[in-house]
Image 1 (cartoon, rainbow, N blue to C red):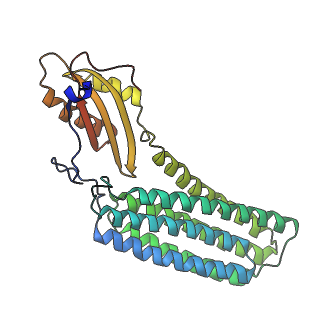
Image 2 (image 1 turned 60 degrees about the vertical axis):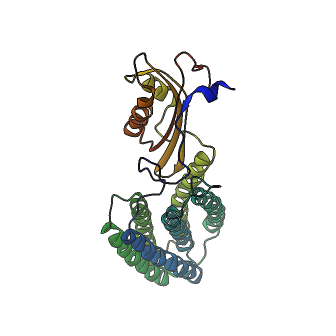
Image 3 (image 1 turned 120 degrees about the horizontal axis):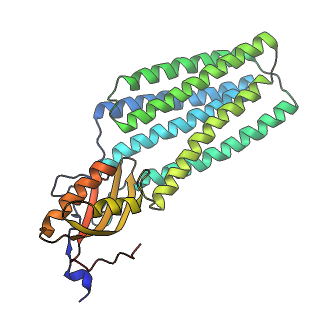
Length: 314
């Protein structure tokens, strides 16, 4: 029999809701979901209008901002996916549920957006070298409509529950869209007053930089989750030291932590009890400390006999 089988091991239940009431599902409200769905419809619909308007007016800036709107529409869609998959129960095969579907979608979305940015940058360089005619009037009309859509979307999200992480993220995306619309309005007015059509490709590059930021954030965060890196702000070595210093804990090691979803982290750790400590009390002490210090909400604790924990394991 292996040494592992002689140890006390507290393992997670196969049910998504553990005996202590812990649930892998994200907190959500029907009201916030409706708000995000409504803003998604606004944003996606206007992205189409903006792309058509950009093609008709010859404005690369509008097309670039349409790409920005598409990126934010994708972010809103991913937020809705997070709500929906959080309601799907885990099963015997997917014991943590379907949360990683959102991560895969985010990775694909980010890669697609980088391709869009590359095209915008290439087209902008061509237009700077060989300016094209810009219909500033239609460009201004489309940009003003976009500003109205984004203001409405921001107000809808602002009036919701701002304690909801999905809603906060969606609100920040809409604010970015709003600033893009303001920039397009300024460029259109500038072209009307000065005739400097170079303002359009310059603005398109600035908007593309916003898209790069959103796309790279999606890609890097997705890769980090898929590689099961420790959650941001968590140092595995420091966590082990902190756990070893807890009352009743003689040793701590074999600490592993990873992100399950945007707002849910998982950890496993081995500890051994100090002399006179009830081993059954350690899982609650350890999990409580990790939740309070690092916001890790699902912890599996294995209690090893004193002197049996291998400190050299990584």
